[in-house]
Image (spheres, rainbow, N blue to C red):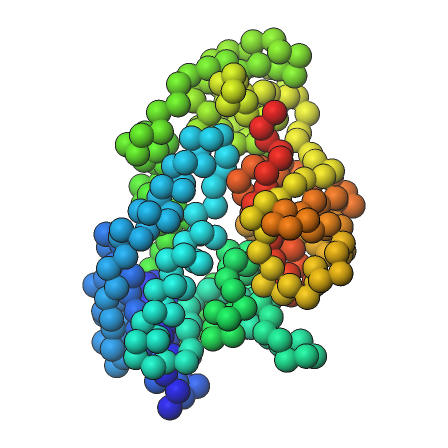
Length: 343
């Protein structure tokens, strides 16, 4: 049997992924990332229920270095970070690959909703999952070398309810466990408090309108993101939106009009299908945040940057968020939004 190292988190998705891999004849080795956030006992219960070994990898320092510090720094600079995108490449899949190499396993697997395919030239492709819960957006910075080793057993599952039903049928102890939080290292959801404990204590400042008129006081730039319309606490004749953050003057610009952009710049671009950019400008669809629809656009690469011009304006692309390029279900690559939201 071929060995596969599976990221076993203690949740229902990775548990069902492990069961499916066993049914497909793989020799499954579980790997739990010990980050100081709990979950090890449930991961061990799942491993015991399935009869697979579980290795514990202590990676709290790596999470702090690569993800937590990045998260705090982005907010410090009035940007909206995407920690899962960074963690997958620098912590999660790196740890999976290191352990797989150690035990001589060819394959890496997780409970992500994504698929692996091949083009007509035999090149590996990252692809959208069948489910609306598709998580390919979060995986777009993985290298083609890593992707060539990946298996995503949940890629063809219809939805999360189907996964839970599978877990129930298998008698897995985590079948009814709630979904994890968006930011795993802030389990209470109070990320403003977490930021302040990590030294991001941005001062209060002024809300202003598009003409510079002071509308009131804000609580600190780290409390806001472009396109936000809730929690502003400012009375107006209509609904207000955050149009821009101005760290140089510590101001939050509000507008009665929703925020749309025709063109954005992205930096630190990574192509998991670099052949698309080989001849320069290419047409595709682009997602400017997780769980939002992709919009038609033209991408012009320029070194580690790319300029994106949308066919129709995109709503509230925020500096720091990932913009990910697609050709249908195929993930081409993506980068971090540089220009909107600060100005």
